[in-house]
Structures are given as structure tokens and as C-alpha cells.
Length: 169
Image 1 (tube, rainbow, N blue to C red):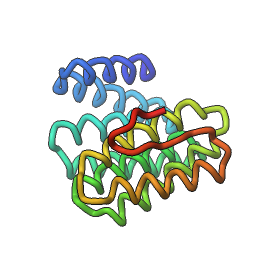
Image 2 (cartoon, one colour):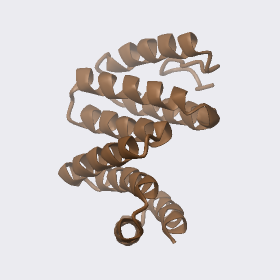
Image 3 (tube, rainbow, N blue to C red):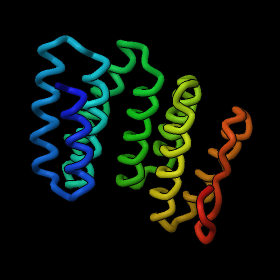
Image 4 (cartoon, helix red, strand yellow):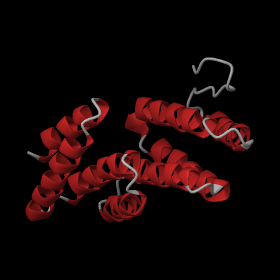
């Protein structure tokens, strides 16, 4: 089924087996479309965008992230809207567009905050976003961390973002 395919693709991606992950996700996307399950389709598109990004297929990743956001809005899923916005933020970082990245990361945080049952997901995602941002040593990491910390403080998420030299909490 679609859920197990998405999980299997995540495992394949983590093992560096990107072509297999892309094939698995393509099958999951087709199955979700055939079943008319837009909620699952959004999740598959988020995963697809991530694998496409890692493999350098940035145009495809942009399309997949946009599709994920569209499907997430269609089913009104704050979780997937947040994940799709985060994917768009990471892509903006790769394009060296810090203003766009910050806009997408801020939207991701706000959506994930609405998904109250997903606080752990929000914490993990924000840690990952900060780590990714810190790979670019151009000052954006500090700006992004400060903005995300302000949002975290204002939402009582219980998340502390730290600088490059410190360990993430």
C-alpha cells in the first residue's frame, strides 16, 4: 500500500539507494492517485521532493514540493502543509535565496504548530532545517535561527535552537 511504500522509500533514501527510492515513490504516487487519496498523495510528494533534491533533480523537486503543498491544502492537513513548505525552504536555500527560504521555513513552522498532535515532528523538522541552514556560512543561519527561536518562544513549542558550535536540544 501507499503508506508502506512511502516508509520503504524513506529507508531506501537513508541507505543512499536513491533510484530505488524514486521508483518506489513513483509507484506510491500512482497508487495514491488511483485510489483518490489526496492526503497520502501529499505525503508521497513531500518524500519525492526530498529524494529528488538529494539527487540533484531540483526542478522536479520544486514541482513535487508544490504538488505536496497543493494536495495538503486540498485536504487541509497542517502537517503536510508544513512539511511541503519546509521542502520548499530547503530548495530555496539550495538556490541561495535566503528571503524565500525564511518565508517558507516560517510558513512550515506555523503550519506544524497548528498540527498540535505533531509537536515531535515539528521539533525534529526545525532541528533539521537549522542544521541545513548552517551548512551555508553566509549569515543566514543566524538570521534563520533567531527568527525560528522567536516563533518557537511565541508558540510554547518548547524548542531551543542553538548556534553552530553548540549541540541541538
